[in-house]
Length: 532
Image (tube, rainbow, N blue to C red; front, side, top):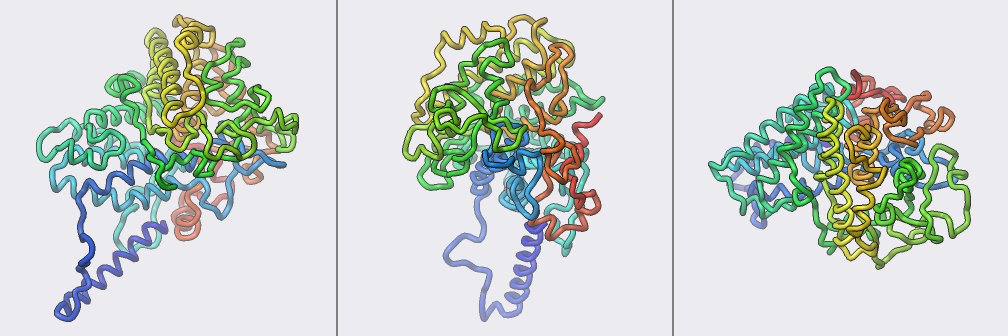
C-alpha cells in the first residue's frame, strides 16, 4: 500500500538521520525540536480517529448509497455507481481504506503501545475497538484486506492480502480483548484522562463497553448465511450493549470551520445534487406496507415543491428516471430546497451542519436482535426487539431534528401511537416477518449506516424473498437490468468495492494479482461472509 510505503520511507529517512546524529552529535542534533514535543500523551491521538470512525463511512456513502438505492445523483445517464460499477483510476469509494491504513494506521498502533505501557486499560480498550471497527469496515466493503503485513516496517514493496475469514477472526479477537480491558479498573484507568479527547462518550468506559458488545453483535450477525451462525450469541451481545437511545454513539459538530461541520451539511457541499430514490420513498409512503404512511417520511425525506413525496427510479436510464421535468414535481434536495439551494437556511434530519452523526444506535442494535431471534424461531423476543427498534428510531428522528434548529415539527405522541398501532408495525409475533424487520432496519439506517446497510442487502442477495411474507426481504428493490449494469460487471450485481486505486492498483499490483483483484469484474466477486 502506498500509505505503508510512505511510512517505510519516513522510517528510512528517520533511521538515516539517527545514524548521522550519532556520528556528529557535537555538530548538530537533528532529532531535537525546540518548538514542539517529540512525544505526545497517548490520549492526544484519540479524537481524530474517533472522528474518522463516524465520518469515513459518510464519505463512502456517496457511492455505497447508490448501490443500495438510498439516493442517486441524477443526470441524463445513469451514473457509474447507480449501475453498480466503479470509477477506474479513482479513489472514489476508498476513503475508509485511506483512513484505516493512514489516518488511524500507525497513529493507532502508537496510541495502543503507549496506553499499554502506562496501564491505561480504558484507552487501550477503545484502541482495540477502533482497530476492530477498521478491519470490519474494510473487509465488509472490500473483501480480502491486508492485516498481517499492514504496518510492516521492513523493506517490503508488496503487501499480501489476508482472507476475509481471517479478518473476521481478528475482529472477534480484538473485541473480546476490548471487552476484557474495558472491565478493568486497576492501573491508570482514568475517566478524566480519557475524557479529554473522547469526543463520543466523554471518557465513560462503561458506554464504550456497551459499544464493544454492540459491534460484537453486529459482526456475529453477519454470519447469518453460515452453518456456524449462532443467533443466541448475537442476542446475548445486544443485551449487554445499548439500553436506550441515551447510549447512542454520536459525534457532535461545533461547525466553526469546514472540517468540524457535518459532512452532510449544506456548507460542506457533498450532497447538494443528490436526490432520494423511488425505493426509499415507497418504503415509507404506504406503497409497500398496506397504505400506511410513515410519519418519519416528512421528517427525513424531501418533498417536491408541490408538497408530494417522489423519488428517482434508478433502474431505468437517467433521462427517464423521473417521469416529469416540471419544476414543481422534481424532488427538492435533502435540505428541503429547490436545486442546490439552502445556504444559511434551516435544514432537516441528519443533513444540517451541526447534526450529531451516529457510529451506532440502540435502534440499529434492536433490529439486529430482532433478526437473530426471528431466525432462531423466538418470534416473541423478535417482536419486542422489533417494536423497540421502531419506537427508538421515531425518537431518534425527533432528536436529530433538534440538533441544529431544523424546521420539521417533532413526530407527535399521537402520530407515534398511531404508527405503532398500524399494520406497518406488527403487534403480534405471528404477524412479524423478515420483510418487516429488515425494511424497518433499512429506514433506521438510511443515509448514515452504509457499511451495515449494504451488508444486510448482500446477506439477502438484494432480492431474496421472505417465505413468510411472500415479499422480498427488501420489497421493491430492483437492481439495474443486465443492459444497464456497468459494462465490467458481466451482468452481475456488485458485491464489493475494489481496493484503493492509488495505494493498491498503483503500488501493490502483485498483492492484488494473488487474490484476483486485477480482474475487471473483481467487484462482483461474492464475499466469503455472505456465502454458505
